[in-house]
Image (cartoon, rainbow, N blue to C red; front, side, top):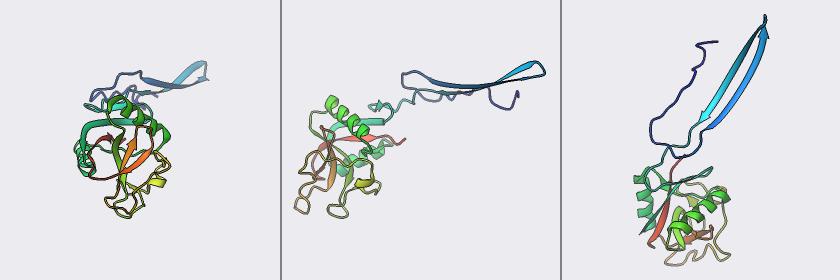
Length: 184
C-alpha cells in the first residue's frame, strides 16, 4: 500500500568506514483479479561509523585503540573515559585475538593495560563494570603461573593483556601502554 512504509531512508550523519553495504531483500507476490502485486522489504546496512582518530575496527568484534604512551592503570582508565570509551574488556576468544593483533602490530612491549582488577577483594577479579571476570566470557591467563603475587606487596591488582592474548595481573603503578574500547 503506497504511503504505509517509507520507500527509502538514509541516515548519513558522520563519516563511514570503507566497506560494502549489506543488502537483504525479501519479497512476496500475489495475484488478484489478474493483477500481480509484489511487496518488497529491503534492509540496507551501511558500513559502521568512523570511530575517530586512532580507533581500529575489528569486524564483528569492535573498535579498539592502543595508546603507546605508557600510563598507570587508573590514569589509563581516565584517558579512555575522556575519549568516550573504556579500558578494553575481553569477552571472547575472538576479542582476545583482535587485541593480540593490535599489540603485535602497534606495541613495542609484551603487555597493555585493560579493564579488570582485584582492588576490592584480593584474588576476586572483576571488570571495570563490576562483573566477575570469570563470567565475562573470557578467562584465559597468559601462563599457568598467572595470576601471581596475590596478597604480596607490592601486589598485582590491575589487569593487562599479554601479546599471546592471555590475561595478566600487574602492579597498578606500572607504566604500560593501554587499550581503549568503544562501547557498542
